[in-house]
Image (cartoon, rainbow, N blue to C red):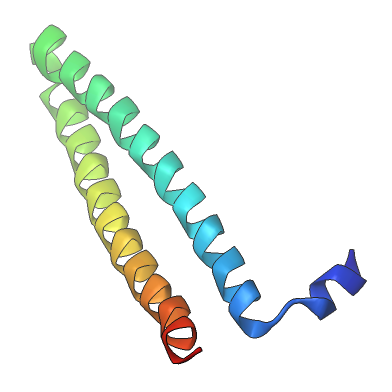
Length: 88
């Protein structure tokens, strides 16, 4: 495995990072959906649990911010991957 790693070009390594980031983005999206379900349950079903719903909403906002930043990073990395390919 270490031989395979050392044989990769910097561009290939960067593309591997992009793939890993996209996988993280996929899981982040799933987390957003799960948090949304929890928030809806707390907000709709348990009106007396306003504090818990607010905390779940705070998590949802933080997860949304993280997902937006992750998407931006992926876009930047994809641009960096495209640069050497344009020159070739």
